[in-house]
Amino acid sequence: MRKNTLVSEEANQFHPSVDLPRIEKAVREILAAVGENPDREGLLETPKRVAKMYAELFSGLHLDPSRHLKKVFLENYDEMVLVKDISFNSMCEHHLLPFIGKAHIGYLPRGKVVGLSKMARIVEEISKKPQVQERMTHAIADLMNKELDAKGVIVVLEAEHSCMTIRGVKKPGAVTITSAVRGLFKSNESSRAEAMALINQK
Ligand SMILES: [Zn+2]
Image 1 (cartoon, protein in one colour):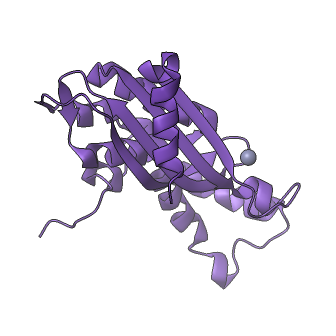
Image 2 (image 1 turned 30 degrees about the horizontal axis):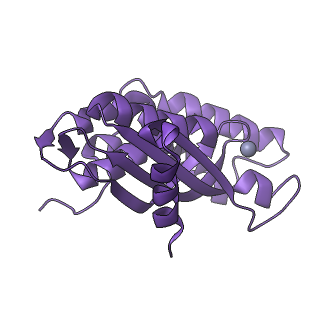
């Protein structure tokens, strides 16, 4: 039976270009370098596990999320479509630590709408690579804009960065909010305000 999950099947398999033994070697090396003994029992399987984990967390490097937006429905609907609270986790490229949060995506269709779950799928795939939240926000907005030829696109991401909570300034609870607007949401202040009000409505 098909599992009801938003992670695509492709994302669950490791891409052939991912060099698992190389990651394992590197993880072993890190353990030795921090003064651990990679040969003690508890750590023996760790490099293997971490290699698979990285293959999964970075699987988006080998996927093209635009394929999810190729199937569109012609619909005479030109009001805003907004999908809120799409949870995601990604990896900060500066520390390789996760940032975890929610994405909100809205668009104003120009005769073409896309299945709502596809918006969650593109967030899922775009999140699976080392990056910064700012670039991830732009990537989602640009992809929606390009593939749907929408009148406007708005993307808001809110996330907690573990590189800020468990190290460095150590400020748990601090939330980073980024937004990207395209088309009408950029030029029309009331459209943007309407979208933001809906996003902020709890
Ligand atoms: Zn970081």
